[in-house]
Amino acid sequence: MIGTSIVHQLVKKGDEVHVIDDLSRGKKENLKDVWSRISFLEFDLTQPIPESQKQFWSVDRVLHLASFVGGVKVGTKEATRATVIPTIDRNVVLACVKNGVKRLLYTSTACCYPVGLQSENHVDYLLKEEDIMEPGAKPENVYGWCKLLGEIMMRQFSKEYGFKLSIVRDFNVYGPREDANPYTSHVIPSLIKKTLEGTRELKVWGTGQQSRSFVYADDAAEGMVLASERIEDGTAVNIGTGNRLTIADLAARIAKSCGYKGRIVFDPTEPQGVFTRCPDTTKAERILGWSPKTTLDEGLAETVLWYKGQLLQAIPS
Image (cartoon, rainbow, N blue to C red; front, top):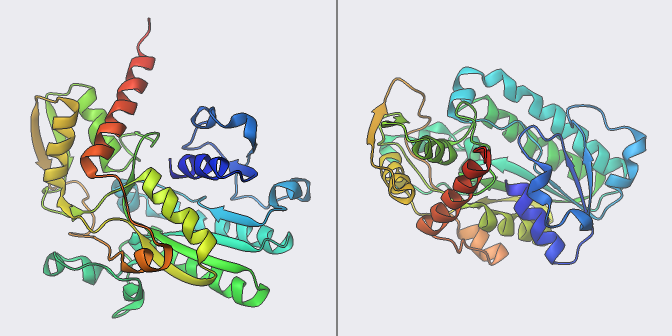
């Protein structure tokens, strides 16, 4: 989802773009509008990168988004699946070093932040980049720990080998083209899928009182491209929006956007993650000159429209 937006933005800027993806979540058709203008390699980056792929790494800049990704249930009940992340990160950074890449963007996550700052006592607190180790590192899950290790790894490689490094921490990115698998997806595509399938009850995990902020994929992609161009010293910036809302409010907005008439119910027996999470975006605004342009209602409308199109395509004519 985010990668697709980034590719479109880079092509529009006139860049020569190479894409590497194992297609475990993405689809080639997402890039059909720019397919003739990019090079694409299907490859699993958990594997060592062979010399035969050298042409894909002989570039000025790498934006590294490859990772294991899953929703809150996977992060809670199958957390060991995230342990492939350090292997992916090491393979990517070694390829960059070997081929003399000048700039690397590392995509980290809001899940790196200490859980103590995301409790019921911090419902108005905006997470700042320097909070990552305060009062001590304590990400909410293995995924967060692996991404925090990735930040440390990238900074050390940058220090030793001299390439320019930027780091972004994404906060709940959503939009068209995101995987809607009910087990592995994030909250927005999961709820949209349920409403469009016409279930009598829209089941929402948790109490509904947990809160998040959400940033539209095209906006996040713009911030990440800017970070890859303007940050050189490994500084991390939050990519998100300071507008916080409860999951109950989110579910109601999605139901309205989808024209859903059923009942919304909450299941506190299902995983719900930390109680609250919202970023301070001052640093991104100051360093990158970036802030999100798309409101939540606008982004949800575009996302729902895309999923409706996917649903129609799936219906036999």
